[in-house]
Length: 426
Image 1: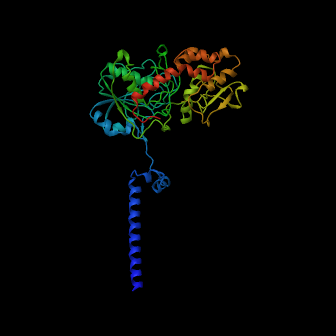
Image 2: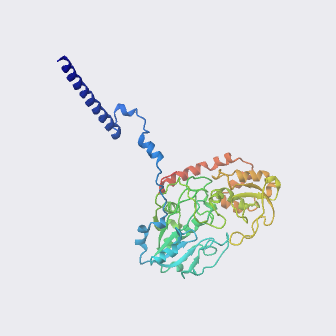
Image 3: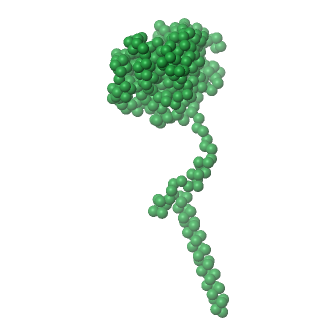
């Protein structure tokens, strides 16, 4: 009898213990899963099994889609309209040119406006060219370069919309944004609508350099922005409109077709070279730092297969690396120091690619006759957007000291820039 009662009691106790353990497990499991804010789970580390699985599971890559791929955004606007495009070799929708694609969709493209380097991007810098007809489609081409940088009223007649699709590089003195500015002004004057098919800025991950002063406005600097301005063409166009920078404070009737899945911290590698002497991403990264050498007799690799990636001068004291600039049809004719061996530095593999004056200062300090280093002072000042930088370089100021002189204006620009951002900032 005693044994039977003991066995019964033991069984009941075991059942109760198992029941309580089960309830406790379910309750604790539910709390962790639902992430209730109890004192207990506040101390639980946030890295859990699900996080471990997430870390070891390949994540789906989010692809950036340029504005020209957002067909639902702009096709309803241009269907059955007369369209002009501002376009060049970078205006690609994957492997198809924008012009060919629009025509395949029965869009009535009546005119092409081509910028510096031409519609196919094979015309040397600064070289004028005349308009002609695209051989493939028969669409007439109007040159927006040389004497005709701004479209005339006659050239905009019988046009309902202008479509701008150009890959910029994010540097103030790269002339595609100047052409965009002049097109905006022409559209405002002639009551035409402008649509910008936005593209990422390959240098959109930072802002740096002196801000242009109004008295140095030119085709290599149309508005008060720094050398590296950190905006897409669409964002910049909004700034131009919003700050009243067009003539007589006019406003352009503007639509920006946004990029999908883009943020300013992204490194955008260009599928097509934006101009003959920016053949790869490294050249684009170094372009804002090396372009100042264009006002000197120092070679930055024009006339080689690696322009804007090397620096050299015919003097062995400038470095051990050497190269000889030569004529390259379709890329560079009559380069600086043509046929002469130059000595200097090879930057093709450098990781230090943000805007810097160190290369300019270093070559100035090594130059035998410093009075002959900057041979085109006016051009140098236009690139700098001021006259101070010339005096600072030639007086021997350090880069750190020079940077302090433009910091206030740069900070003001950065604050203004925030108003026009369409994408998550860096």
